[in-house]
Image 1 (cartoon, rainbow over the protein chains, first blue to last red):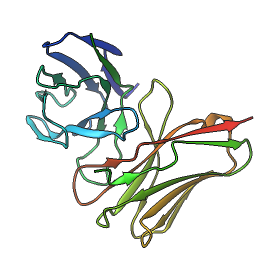
Image 2 (image 1 turned 30 degrees about the horizontal axis):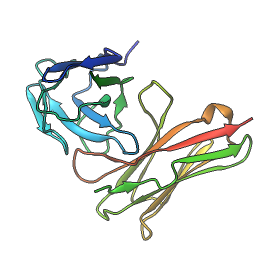
Image 3 (image 1 turned 30 degrees about the vertical axis):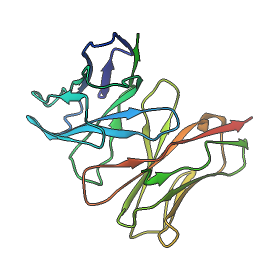
Image 4 (image 1 turned 90 degrees about the vertical axis):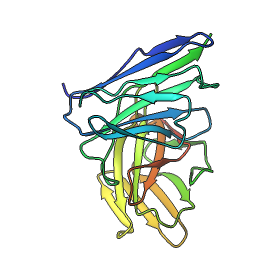
Length: 114
Length: 111
């Protein structure tokens, strides 16, 4: 079955701790994305990557970091610099990185701060 | 600054009737629009798209209408079915890699 997997489904972070959210896809897509969803707001882009070893900041990249060492994987680290990390995080991928490419989403990870 | 807005957070419709979900945008440069559907605890799934060179696109029970002069997009579902109950997001992009998403409208189809 082709698709995008995100793990874990729920993640708890202590104050001052870095946590990493996993995103894996077996769709052979070149581009991958991370979004954040907060209540009453649309999805906001954190980072995206069009090819391996390259990524760009989205609108709300501060306090986050990513890597793209493999085509299939695009992990997101929520650092201690992110002061309000509680949110629902969605990973997506698309065949190419163009503006008309349909993005396919994973099931999401809900991050909660203890 | 919300460039794509869905002003109705929720909508209830009787089964078999038409559901109309609305979306407004502020950036006149947007030239590609999509609708996504999201069930609880799942990621959004692509539903239908429209390019700015068209004013209508149809796919089965789903039709998207684009009014560029009004910067307004709508999704019509006819006939509505209980399985259509979900949150619907509109999204827009232009000549770049980023999609801007609306806040979503929760549709409930009442049997």
